[in-house]
Length: 103
Image 1: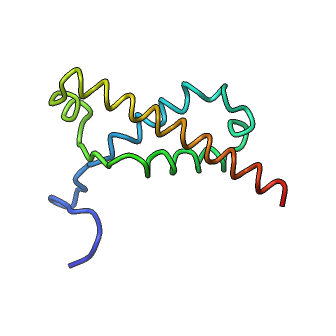
Image 2: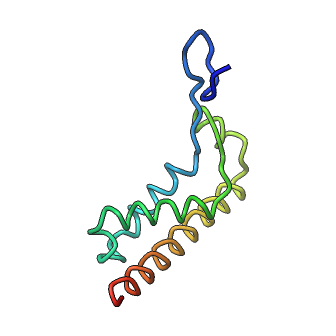
């Protein structure tokens, strides 16, 4: 059997990590706070990866599938975790870029 995404009638079963969209939104919200990183697409990609790797994956088919089952407290905690992961990622990538520039 071929490896890859499971299929039904030759159609891929759509699944995605809910945290990806949340991280993209959080990055956009703080982009102006990190102008040196914001103007470099490679550094922004690094920020995205670092932030996503700090969060547990949450695979869903539709956003409503995930959000429907969360309490308000869980939603707030998730938003806080995403913001913290993104801030950490910006700081980490920015610090590495400065060290790399000195080398």
